[in-house]
Structures are given as structure tokens and as C-alpha cells.
Image (cartoon, rainbow, N blue to C red; front, side, top):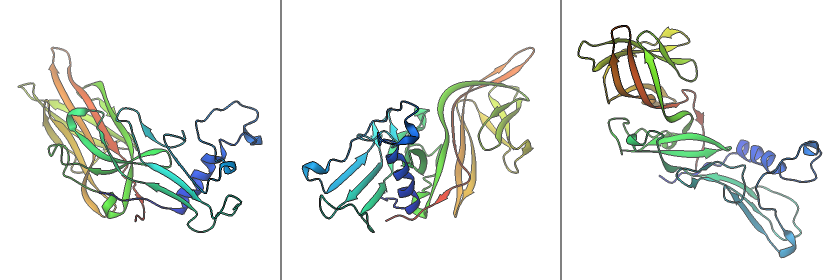
Length: 253
């Protein structure tokens, strides 16, 4: 998949980011702000100048995988050209493959957009987690809300808070102490069809239609182990991934 995003909204936003590096800006004189970036130098005859995460800190960069995807290029007719006409300022972003925070899940395709992380597509690296759903090819991207491998403990009857009003609630543990029944709450109300029984070492997956794409996993939670005690039962979670249910519709070339 080699799609690129080019939007006028993106260009306007990137211009605001570039303004932040101008030393003469009165808006930042009161506070010392340092943003890494390469300055355009017309004295050496530059007619084309490009910025990405390697020479401008305002773009998204993944330190774990060492990848980035955003690029801004200015095309000038001459060194004296001070007019940015149509197609002279181009913002591009292409998807890159990154590891999930919970690396046992494998990889997914992510795209940097306006210095934020957005989900593009699931890979086929772990069919148990994903179903190879591709949002970008259908004209959508969705913000990555959670992508972590932290350990969480929830007792039976309590919840794991998520984003956009969601929470995962543990309802019951089986007699064998391996199965857990979960339901998903949205703004405190149970989500229809979210009731699921999950074995330890497996994943709770909630799918939803995103834009025109059906059955997209928007919440994935890994159940590491289960504890049954005399006074309390608990579920140990390690690995949470969530993307927004409100995608951005884009045009790509």
C-alpha cells in the first residue's frame, strides 16, 4: 500500500507549525521555545526545500521503530520567487508499518497526520487479532487513542477505562479460573453485542463499522492471566489498543 495524503487543511496546519520556528515571531518572544528544524536558505540558490521528521520536529516520529511518514515540500520558480502558487506547497504522508505496543500482536500500518498518529490498516501478521481491515484504501484514517503494553488489574464487577467514553467491564470468572466474561460500556451503558467470554492468554476484540468499512476492530485487550481468591477475583490485562470510532475522511493520490 503506497497511498499519500494531500489536503489543503493539512497544508494550512503545517504552515502554522513552520511559523513556530521563525525567530522573529512576536508571539513567542515572551517564552523561550526550541523546535528542531532546518531553515530555508535562498542565498545558496535553493529552489526546492523539503522537511520531514528528520529535519523538522513538528512532524510525527516513532522512536521505537525509527520511522516517520510526513513530508512538506516547497517548489519555487527561482531563488527570488516569493509567491507560493498552486502546487508549489505540497504536504504528503504515506503509511508505515509499526509494532503494536503489545508486540505479540505483530504490526499495523500507521500514518502520521498533522503530527499525530493515525491508524491506516491492520496487517495479516496476527489473524487472531485482526482481519486485515484497511481503512486508508477506503478513504479513511482513524486516530490511535491507545497503543500500550502496561499491566492493568481489574476485579470482577469493576472496569478498565478506555477512550471516547468506553470502558471494559469484567462480569464473571469461570469455575476453572481460565474464562472471563466481559461486556463493553459506552457512557455507562452496555454496548449491544459486546458480551464476550475470553480465555486467559487470549484477546477481547470489539469490532465496529468505521466509515464504510464493516467489522473493524477498534478495541483489542489482551488477557494475560486470571486470579480466583477467597475474597476477590481479578483479571490481569497486558496490552490495550484502541482507535477512534470517528474517522477522518481523506482523499489520496
